[in-house]
Image 1: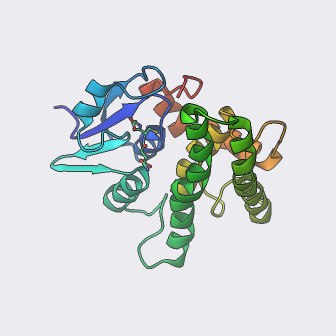
Image 2: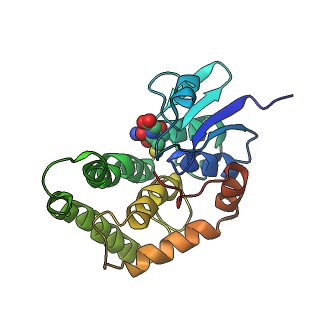
Image 3: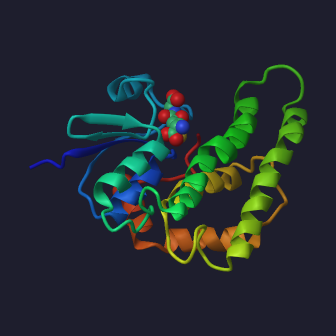
Length: 219
Ligand SMILES: N[C@@H](CCC(=O)N[C@@H](CS)C(=O)NCC(=O)O)C(=O)O
C-alpha cells in the first residue's frame, strides 16, 4: 500500500526541513520531487502542488497543508507522541522551540530574501548598495544565533537534544551562508559547528539521500 503521507519537494528548498522530521519520526512518505528550472519552480510543478504552489506542501490523507513551520507542528502533534522534537502544548519549553521555528521564517529568511530578491530583480542602481544596506540585519541574526549557541553551552538550539528548532533553522542558516547573503568574509565558529552536528544526524542524512536535496543547485 502506498504511504498516506506525500511531500511536494522542490530542489534546494525549505522542503528539507519536513523531510528531515519525517525521517526522524520514522514515518513512511512519498516524495513528489521537482528540480528548479532557471532557479525557480517550474509552472507545471506549481500547478500540481496547487494553492500558491509552494514547497513544502504536505498531504496526509484528506489533509493538505503548507508552511514548513505549520507542517512541522502538525507532524509533531500527530506523530511525536513522546514529544521528542517539540514539547507538549502548555509546557513552557514548547514556546522556546516554537520561537526558533517562527524566527527561521519570520526573521532569518525575511532578511535573507530581501538580499536574494534585490539580486534577482533589482534593475536600477547598484545591487551592492542595496545589499550593503540590508546585510546589517542578517549579520545581527547570525551574531544572535552564535550568542545563543554559546550561552546554551551545547550543540543544539534548545537544550541538550535535537528539536524542530534545529530542523527549521538549519535550512535558513545554510541558505544564508551558501548564497553569501551579506556574510562574505565573516565566520561564526559555533554556528559552523552546529551545522556540522545537524548534518551528522542519521535522520538528516536519510532525508538528503531520499530526496536528492542539494543546496548547491541554483535557487
Ligand atoms: N514560508 C513558506 C515559504 C515557502 C516557499 O516560498 N517555498 C519556496 C521554496 S523554498 C517555493 O516553493 N518557491 C517556489 C515559487 O514560489 O515559485 C514555508 O516556510 O514553507
